[in-house]
Image 1 (cartoon, rainbow, N blue to C red):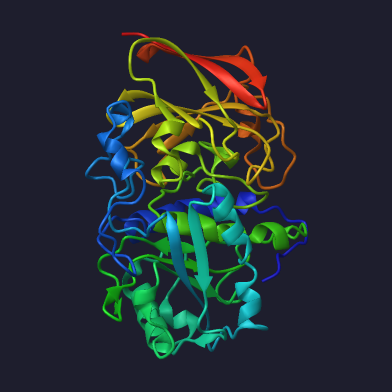
Image 2: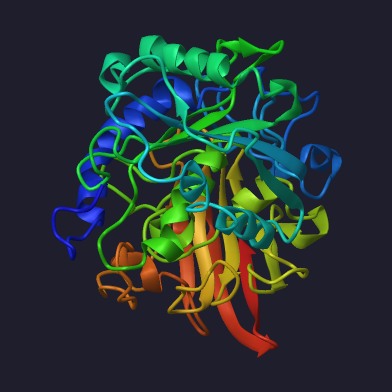
Length: 427
């Protein structure tokens, strides 16, 4: 659907919708479970790193009452996040919202851009393959209105019935055992415009999902109205809602809160997926298994140490310094600079943030520290949390946490775009 005004900004509408979206996510869509379209026998991400003595103090543990944790490794039940991932992608419409144009036109709103995004973000470790064995619109047997899908709708009964109907319609042409996750691209004229409410949602790790060909449809993302602010950028940026939703199928929580993206800003697609391109935090790349243990340092011992970091978007080199506070909380340091998916970075430098594995999705499990609070930021890109756009610390700047005896000083650039930092922690 077209926006009410061709220049109407998206982000205020996005923020207004977040409270209900968070409730939906917490209810079912991001709860851990045992499913997959093909249930894995291993956890996602850096499972083997737990055996590393050097990194063990930085393996944050999630609380038992946290539905989607920032802890590592990611619990079982989510889709694999390395190697070849087969993403079954189906386009659906309804009698009261018939698909307009070709279903494959809808498919190409997201591909190959989503594949390219994951290839860059994962340094080639994720081979994401969208597969669409049904190339036309799958007409659902009920009208969109009859499913009762609205902002904040739980899995039961509407989404359960919808999944069952999708399976019934697609089953003659689809072997569900062949796929790792499900993407449902809904005709954009079903439901309200994304300017008015955000319906796109993921039900991940859901062990109670309907079964098809003997496997539960446990990791499924639904994308509705186009995230189009009328600025003419949709063709380039509109796909980004899908890698955000697929991030949930890999076990990543929402980093925005009911107040919007003010905790993390545009530094992770799980915080802001509207507007110009952005990447994932280094913590998430490690959690997903896209970083080697040798690329991560764990500053857990008292004393002072210096480290060299390479830009996060670049393949190879040291990427992440972790400074654990306790078994569930750690500071993280990484170097963000323009390149790859990070095309909108307007102030390169060391991004410092806190990860709390005891805080649930949508409640602020990650907090970015702003090196220039109250500055108004440095970006003019639309639909970006402006205040945090200049958050990175640069040469000569210092971050301090007196309570935990942690000091980080950025020593400066050392050639090739790399930076050196000094970390000091008390006993």
